[in-house]
Image 1 (cartoon, helix red, strand yellow):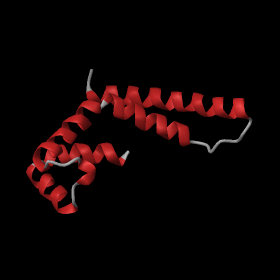
Image 2 (spheres, rainbow, N blue to C red):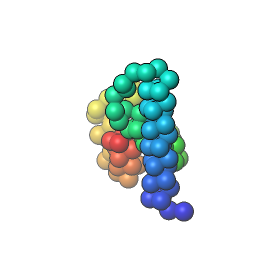
Image 3 (cartoon, one colour):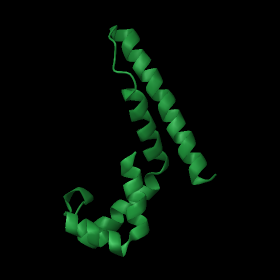
Image 4 (spheres, one colour):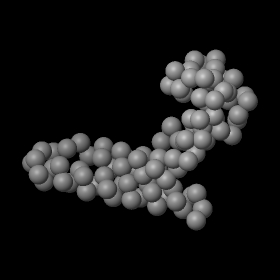
Amino acid sequence: MSRLVKSAAGGGLGYLGGILVEHGIEAVFGIDFINGVCEIAGTVMGLSMVNRDLVTAAYEAIERETGKEPAAISKDEWERFKKENPNTAKYLEKALQI
């Protein structure tokens, strides 16, 4: 199965799960929950679960080259990593833009 199909399926299932969670919260607690929050969170979670191999590979590459966790690297270190690994950086940036 192609990555696009997997991503669409994972995002779609996450979205449906978010709808169920949101309606469940509204039904059980009787409150009007903010529309769309659970759906967006479910979609992001579904996409990240399907594409976790890309995110894991990018994380390990950054950690291997800088010796730090990605959250701890400086902007200069990130720019240097982007120049040395443009494809990995591109996939990671796409994953984090969602």
